[in-house]
Length: 348
Image (tube, rainbow, N blue to C red):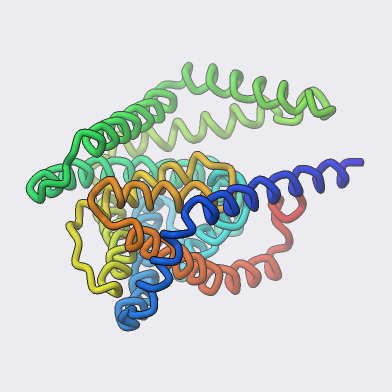
């Protein structure tokens, strides 16, 4: 019975994804035809350059985690973190959980190296928090660049404002929750009870998520947060590597424009990628599929990019980055599975 329910859930998810893609193709068919014509004359060299750029992106993220763990007085070797980052990106793109699968996988992946659940969780929270801060700064710079180029219309300004306020609010909420012991305990109980209540509706036993165990993990997370707060200046290296990783991520998208022979305003790339990536995190579909593509295309068009070029850039960017994710992440992911056994993600 359980496997039958699981099958139905996956079936409906796949049907929804397929329906969204069919709707997008039918609705945007003239632009797709235009995009195919534009893609025929692509410069192959900028596309090939995306391979080392993607490796540099992974390296930047692995260095962020390396220096982040150093502040927590936890040394994880670089040769462990670099493939783990590639696997983490693979998991977040393959498993339909809005990015939550990455938290579970990273915890499982680093457990053999004496990294606790709290520390691996805090490292990923730190990744998003530092990433959000960098994104906020880049959005302000992009607004200035777009205004200088005459592309900062009212719609673009509203979108940037909403995203910046949302990122600031989310970052502030994370710091607020883990900042005090009492808030951690209250948040843990509320979250665990909510999840158990939802699961109970599907016939699960009353306490699937054990409050005491989760509470202990979050209290450890709070203690590690206090350590970081007291040694905040030591996080400069981690912040630098996060900014560099995001730069390489932006360079991946810019390379596709260059392959089309277009040297666009960098603000266009920043705004489209940041907003689409945030929306992709919220979406439950693997890799934000069906949400990322139409949103990025629409954002490009709103900033003066022709529909054909916008769609061509979006589709080629997604195809290449997803291919690189599979090629670079799956082999090391499979090696990790063979070495340490199946993860909870595979058992579900």
